[in-house]
Length: 221
Image (cartoon, rainbow, N blue to C red):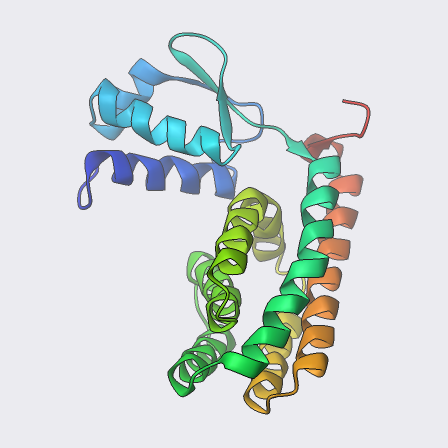
């Protein structure tokens, strides 16, 4: 039985986490009536949660009572990261100019968390929080909102890094270096470091997707 938050929010969080971690794998079918019974919610909050997941392209409706987990797509992954290659460095450059002392403290606090021995889910969430701290520190609300939406669309792909342990040490080192550079107000170097960081993550995930055919459909699908 789910507890805390609203029932719709709790259902959303639980189903989303199952999708991100592969408990509900790509292309899996979900019967809404069975899922509602399992989660202990009625049809209305469950459907609200599923519509929210649909807006993030994590599921899609295929029949009145059936929902399918969206398939992973190498093409979608490449296209989403192509946008991040441009916008993440911009956010870092602006953060170096506009970040407040409080925002810098938050970044360094998240760096400390990422260096600690934490569970996969906490590491995953800390990683996002660090990047979001940079977006917010840019002072550009529209940019931060756009990058937030991109993260929503790419979380299943990035979770591959967490589950495989790939890039863990290098990522923590990157975060520390990026935070230091932003604090030193070196916008150009911060932008370069973040661009390299995002590119390396992209390349590792892309190799995994290409190697494991069940992960993603190809460009012709």
